[in-house]
Image (cartoon, rainbow, N blue to C red; front, top):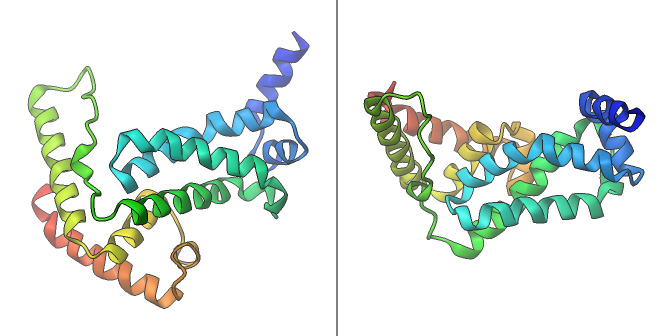
Length: 188
């Protein structure tokens, strides 16, 4: 009973507390972080790689790295962005290793059970159009767009992740957004 109440309190605790406990070696706190951020990290990695076979491996590798490097986390409250940086680096490394074989169309998401067939077809066509538009972007613009729009990175984090000046990240992202807006106009 007491252990269950502790686990519930840990699940409800904010990132700073949970990450702090995980940094101190608390395996249950680390498991909370894994449960809390795996879906977001998987979605991000899937958008970056478009290869479902590698997604789970990269997310798992990212958590292994996080566990090994918890001492490098300066602010436990920023564990979310720290984990996303780790998974992003792993995904970018994988992209660089397999370039140019990245294909967003390989993601086949199941349709919601309550969706009408016409809505499912339209949604899949939209995803296919988004994939085609992303493939047309130069690599640097695509990486910036995915980091910002899918990963939720700040300009500073994109700059750090891609090892480019912030002004370059802003410019690449602006060009990518402009292109995507024009290219996806019919799907608005």
